[in-house]
Amino acid sequence: MGQPVTPCSAKALDSRQLDLPLFSELDPDTRAPQNTPSPPNETPASPRVPGAKLRRLILSGRTLEYGLKRSTRRTIGFAIDGTGLTITAPRWVTLADIEAAIAGKERWIFTKLAEWQTRAEQRALPRVEWREGAHIPYLGKPVRIALASSNGALAFDATEAWLALALPAHADAQQIKDRVQGWLQNEAKRLFGERLDVYAQKLGVGFKGYALSSAATRWGSCSSDGRIRLNWRLIHFPLSIIDYVVAHELAHLREMNHSPRFWQTVESIFPEFREARQTLKHHPPELLPAL
Image 1 (spheres, rainbow, N blue to C red):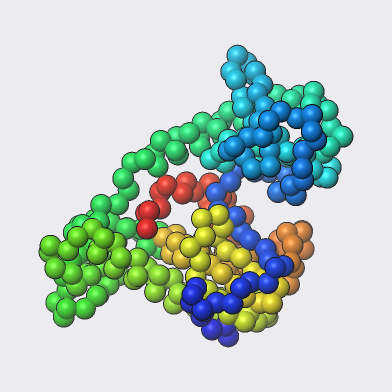
Image 2 (image 1 turned 90 degrees about the vertical axis):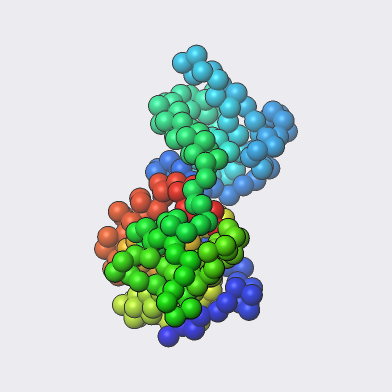
């Protein structure tokens, strides 16, 4: 059974580590490429896409900006995130072929870019007002914040879905936020440990320890020495999503890759992984409280 490790005391992860990314829109037929320097005849570097060269293309009367990276991969890869479109292509592929491939995916590209634009606009809106009566997502359901409890201690009522913080009525937003975050992280540490034990037993593997993460780019990671890190904000999601990430990271103790054998390993202990993976992949980050 693995023992919880707090972020401040966790040892540095082994350099051989696999991550479960947070929010990116990858073409389903591509994998994340390795970055290599671009040839000198490309356009100037893009400040928004590290390692890429910024280019422009007119498609159906619309100007598309994209970052172009050259690599040793064999196919052209497409990725869309908050920075826009990034193309990763083999060094031997001509610019004409690259832009023809982009044109072939025009509809998909503009649809995904529009989705990210909507997310960016929504992100500017307040999501949680740290006050009496506000709601936070906990295991996929809203929980109401209250500022007092009868015995003067923090209390959670799962049936009535409220969290009493034992704070005075005049408590400020930062006090409320800190108290809620502390409770959520404690819940994450407890629950993640329980789920890791359950799925480690199912798979017949052992892990050396686990720690909570606050990473902005990944949900979880597993090092080759058996140490697992899980993003504490997973506590906002239903248990099925947490179980998928747990199963994903534990499967890396058998397969330190994302090969077909790896996904077969995940499926052996969590058959519903495809639906959970899609839910997590497409869940907008701004719907989570900015804790």
